Amino acid sequence: MSAINQQPSLIDRASELRTDPAALDLLLKRAKVLTVGGGKVSADLASAKLLYPNVQSVENYFLGIDRATDTPYFAAHVVESEGLLSLREIGAALSPLEIGIALHAVALSNWHTSHPMCSKCGAATTSSLGGA
Image (tube, rainbow, N blue to C red):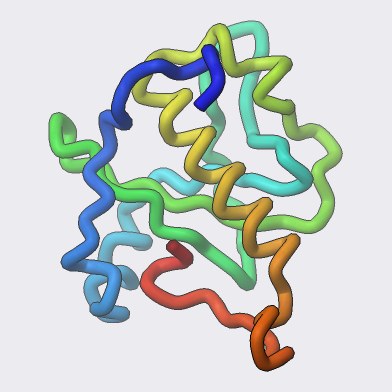
């Protein structure tokens, strides 16, 4: 991992919930949802904080739960990245919690974007286990 984040994530990935679509749906209703696309995230440079706008997305990725506040986090993948900021632009200014969220969101988004087909059989890949 790069020097931008040298600590474990503060988010519980909650792997036990990833196979339960009903639980994920309930979590999504009260979650903070980060917009992510093109290697960028929704953030405000002036306040050095991630933004969690109410964006509708066909593809949401479950990032995990902040157990300190019981807040679930998801990423909403978008194709258009206009208005979003790269980790180079905002990463160093984010809190340890938020840099972990942003790194995970960008990594999942990049993986799903660059792997639309199975390399073994050629079938379209689909998001499962909450996107992870």
